[in-house]
Length: 336
Picture (cartoon, rainbow, N blue to C red):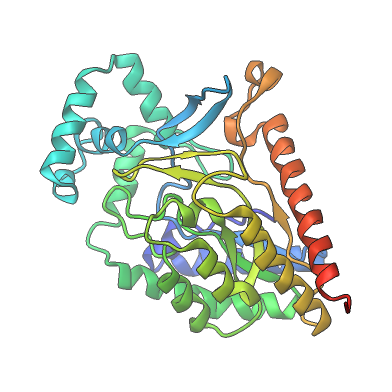
């Protein structure tokens, strides 16, 4: 199941969280009763995965999802006009954003706003400019430590339910893995993952290892993280990104980008074989996640990340790598 949405009241804490947590636990139990073995979820405040361009043209004539840091700052500071937003960025970034906004028409600004806040696949709801302004204001003053404390309190309640009903939980990293709109994001780095896994030591408390999300942050070593957390990776999103010096990024071909996808697949396959031999689990479910908008899908009502042909292309490439790596591992185990 991808995903059970986590209400913002849980992330903020307080009186409304009790009802939302109980509802989440009921849903989790029902999924377990139905035989669903893995549940993905995220803890991103207000906005789910966020991009500034859902139709970024590629040299291949396809289209990709892109996050442009300058465009995002322009929206945050000069369109949404979040109080004190400029203080979250450098003066050079704010100046560049002001120049960028001056080149945009009113239609361009509305498209940018829709891309950022108007609802995406997997998101719980669409936002308007007034509604997102109000939602962000409810997080004002909350620190990363406080939001992390709310996540840990949530885990201590839901992990026992997952264990009871035979479900493995898999928290998805922040996407992008850094603060947006001044709100804390606490599933962005290797240290974040360590704290989450240590908070409730159970195989039912695990990660969705999204190579693209973790890879969107230059100081994340995707392969080192995969090796360290392999036994607690309960779900894998195999996708890739190209990252630019200012923090912008664009979704790349599945086998290109920052993460060495062949090496990552080998790490996951070795963990899968070890887990199976030790009786811990049979497999690590994965999906190609996202993909470029290609061919006739351009004429269909589909976001680039969720188009049929692009994801099928990625799946075919990943399966080819998996078969090759598996054959290599088989030959390793055959005596000379």
